[in-house]
Length: 146
Image (cartoon, rainbow, N blue to C red; front, side, top):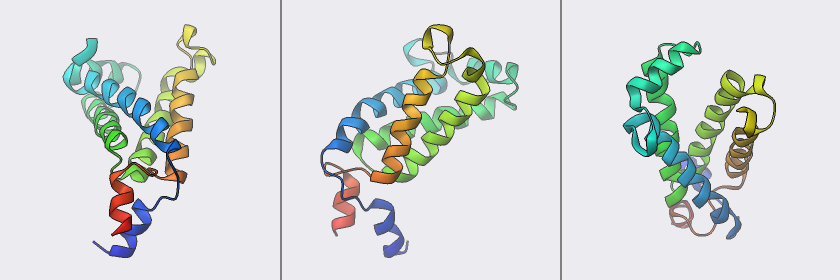
């Protein structure tokens, strides 16, 4: 891989603040992805999530569940450890846009009505990390420093 490209991808001049965003949001994303992929934490796994996605028009449902679950699970893990945070955050932001506009937008803002409030918060953190990078306490920073 081109060193200049890798340096751009992993560069970050952010301090410790990104860590405060990465860890809790990474845990949330990884847990939601685990629900979709493995049925953990009360989730329905790929089969159940795929059927639901088909029912709301995201077809083929199984593939969409695999893509969304993988983005959330592996993207969340990437945020937690601070590896390739910019591309992971971009993928997670895209996933949140899809979730907001395909599931939640018609329900208004508030979570109490299954609205887009939570998705919007996760979208905001993801976009912030695309611009800031992983921050001081990250594998990305160690890679960029080499």
